[in-house]
Length: 337
Image (cartoon, rainbow, N blue to C red; front, side):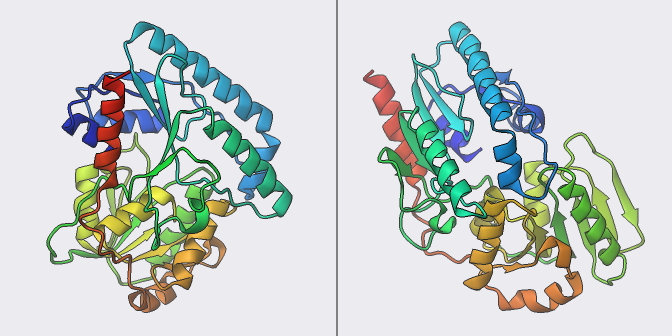
């Protein structure tokens, strides 16, 4: 969303392509922009090991990449696009356009060395199919992605700084104790929801649980202190974060960037088996930024007693905005092609 916003500010004509919940979210946030549907990645998560899930479905992933590449070629053949910015979609490039790949994972984490080496080699090969790579992080420490994005194994890289759809507001009076933001693949999303609900019912703190279900607009209360909703718009989620004393969420990178932008402390619970999330949760817990707990050992009562010892992400880079320069450079390059 910050990339779309900056492109629009600088006068670019923008179209959106995605699938599933991501497409519906972007269509809801940008109702006036043309949008196109891409084929989904039908990836299953039969085990808690993300590396095993990915490696065991390598052929399915390759087929999905080819399918989205073919779909994109059909879209481009009917449109006059000059550039494609792909947010971690390896098939979204075209021979007639300038192609940018966007990711913070230049260095892949895996539970064992061979898998990490194989995935890193494949990742580098795929990124080099693009003309350029944008990394949503700072080039120099302190970085939000630790060593996931640096040192870079490829040369055509530009760092955009931390990107978030949210901006920091003036302090507000807290209207609740805990906001829980659920996300990620099933069945782990549901497992976490069940665990949190069971514990929240036993605590006296006030909770708002956002289930992360795009098509669920129901809102219900359980007792006086517990409220559950399927989905919030960006504007409503922004407000809910500010009105909550503590945040409980996954340690996905977009969430990390949002927390950093808002300078909020949080309790992070990585998705089991997602090595990137597990790495980020440990990284921030170790340096005193965010408290983290494993899903199987979640103890909200204990976490709420300890969370104030963690600082949240504090930065003196408020005036740094590399994205603006990166977009300006891109548009200037397109004008001279």
